[in-house]
Each structure stands twice: as C-alpha cells, then as structure tokens.
Length: 260
Length: 260
Image (cartoon, rainbow over all chains, first blue to last red; front, side, top):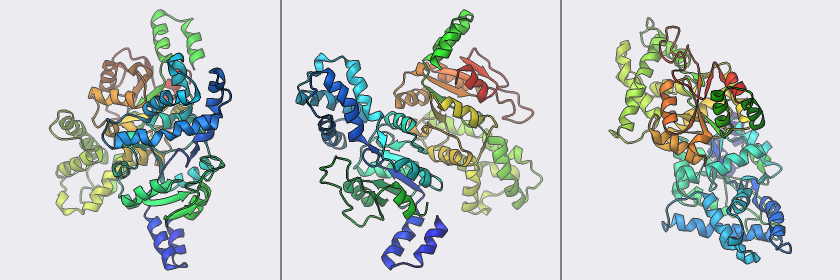
C-alpha cells in the first residue's frame, strides 16, 4: 500500500496529495460496527417479529420496534459518559432499554420470563454484515490491523464476528477503554492499546458525529455511506458532512481508496 | 462437541465421566502463549544471533541470550503483581530487562542506538507457533471462543497472530485485565469480559503453575506438554503434575480430547 499511495500522491492535486500522504501513516483501521459494518435494524427486526407475535403485538412493525430500542441507546450511554453511573457493558444497557420500551408496544415486561428477554437481548449479537463488509475487511486486514472500535461489549462483538465471519485482529472498543464513544478517551485509549499515535489510526464509520469526535483526537477518518441503516426514510448521515480523509460508498471502495 | 462428549461420558469410568461432563460446559478456551502456543526460545535466539554478531559477542550462544532474557520475566512481573509498581505492558518490561541483561554478554547498552534495542525487543512479536498450534486452534475455534490469556500485551499478540496466522477470536490477557498472571484477577477478569462463569472457561497451558492458579479461580484446565520449550535440557513442566481436566501432547490431541 505505501508504495502505491506514494506513487499516486505524486500525480494528484495538493489537497488529495496531503490526504494520501496522511493515509500512508495509517497502521490500523478501527470500525464503528452498528450500522457501519452490520445492519442492526434488519437484524433486530428479524428477531423481534416472532417475539411481537407471541406477545399479542403482531400488528406492530418489527422495524419500529428496532428503531424504538435503538433510540434509547444514546441517552443511556450519555449517563455513563457524564458520570451519572459507572461503566456497564452495552448488553446491560440494551437489557434495561428493552424493559423500558416494551410498554410502548403494549407489552408488560413483568409478564415475560427473564430468560426470554435475555434471549431477545442477544439479537444484537446476531446481526448480519452489509454485503460488502467481509470482503472489504479481508482486503484491509492484509496490511493493516483491523478491529472494532464499537460501543458494543467484547462478548457481543465476539459472538457477532464468529457468526458472521468478521475477520477482526482484535476486539477493541468501549469495554476495553471502559468508556463509551464519543468520549475522547474511547478513541485515545484504543490507539494506546495498539501502541500507535492517533494519526496512525483511522476510524471507519457511517456516522459524521463519530468521525468528528475521532478527528478531534487526531485520528484519521473514513466515511462509509450507509444510507439505509435507518430504513428507506433515513434523513441523517446520508452523506459525508466534512472533508473526511476517505469518503466511500462501501468497504470495498474504502479498500480501493487506501490501496488495500 | 456436546453430544459427542455426552455419549462418551456414558461409556467410561466415573472419574473420566466427571471430567467429560465438566468439559461439556466449556464455552471458551483461553491460552497461555509463550511456550504453549509459540516457541519463544527459538524465535528470540533467531533474532539475537545477528545482534550478538554485530556487537562483538559472536561467541555467545543465542539460546543462552534468550534464556537470560526470559529469566528476568517472572521477577519483573512480580513487582507489578506485588504492587511495587503500577501495571505496565510486557513490552516495557522486556525492554527494561534487555538493557539490564546486555552486560552479562559483555555489551554496553549505552553504546547501542535506542532504535536497535527497540527493534530487538520486537523479537517477542515475531515468534513462530509450534507445528501443531494453528491446526489445533482452528479446530477448537469451530465451536468455542478462543483467545490468548497471555501476559503479553495486546499489540504484541496482534503482531504475532498476524505474522503467524493464529486465528484468535479476541485478544485478552494481562493488558485487558490490567494485572499479570498468576494474580487471580487475571483469570477472573478474563472470564468476566467473556461473560462466562469460571467453569465455562478452560485455560490451556504448558506450565503447571499457571494451571494451578487458574484452577484455584474455578477455571477448567488443559495441559499441553512442551518438553522442548526450554531446549533439550529442560527439567521443568515435562509432564502434568496434577489431574488437569485434559492432558495432551499437542493442540490436536487437545482438540481430539474435547471432540473438536
């Protein structure tokens, strides 16, 4: 990659040249996972559908259930980032959020066995990758370290990777850093564990706010567009909102862009 | 694995039956790495040889250099375990130990560029697996989580795995636990990150003392004999010194024993 990128840097505009030279330094790509690597909405809806049927909510749209569950994710993490509560892994937040949102669908969580809720909570461990994710990751892995920098906990990421065949070199992220993104320490501790300078690490994400937080910490940034992450009516993160170091339509375009 | 083990449990002695039923519970195999999965002595000696030649110590045996370096490993970790100093990653201890032992070989560390010592320190990142390690790990990975539970730091383990093709599902161990083995927390925090009970985790090691510490924490134990880890004159850990749950001569025998 380094020689190829350096060659290209000699034949392009000065802006592009600066970007290519920056990418030459990158030794690790770390990834947002929910939405960027895997389809959380489709995966959660798939497991929610029989659950809703069993509990008298067959009229509810499983995608709406996924959206409602996901909508409680950021507020729950903010309490940890803000110090209102100590770090707990995402499985714990997901489980609490599930209980809290079931009444929105006319379901009383107290009437459901804990084991059944535990099992539904594992839907987040069984999400499918977007069609380009595995081939793109395999290409990037050849000459770079690849690891999740997700708010998902280690076991969640391990279960997901084993089921889907995601070829991570390591499982990093919030549980290893003991703090959730977008807290700066989530990015900086990840670089530190990899014994890399921030500019040697590139965050790959479909979310402009995640990339903005990573850039503030000195990381390189790659936007991969996922315009259907939130379904056909998605209104946010449809495109790159800043001059991220790489802007790509999928993981293979990212691999192309960095010469992997 | 579970059905096969349960079948075998019906046709064996009561001791063996208890062991097989215990192994049915195991969901993750975690591994000692230096000596158990990879050949540290041969790998360090290979990189020490040209270094010794360059610095006027061509008469020294590279294997003796590896042994001398390794002999400072346990005392250095004990200072961290005992609270004499805060946790630092193994790369830091290896680097300090290297400087401390060079005079034993008639080499003044102050006369060598820091970059050259840094590079030699990375010999520990480039160790080769024993011939059976990769095939055994691949078999075990099919139905279990596999991860290092090594005192080596994350980046060391990642570099080693990428170079050698070790198919870990995650990189766990001392740096994730922020404490070195044999401190009980090294084992217990590893089980906790995996969201498993201690008895659902099996430590694989060529060292009886490591297995004894893991067993005290409630982990299952598998001894894999590595009688040449310390060279042809090895006197310790030649065989299992307790009734570990599995006793095997290599990783494939371990995979056989657990029906993987």
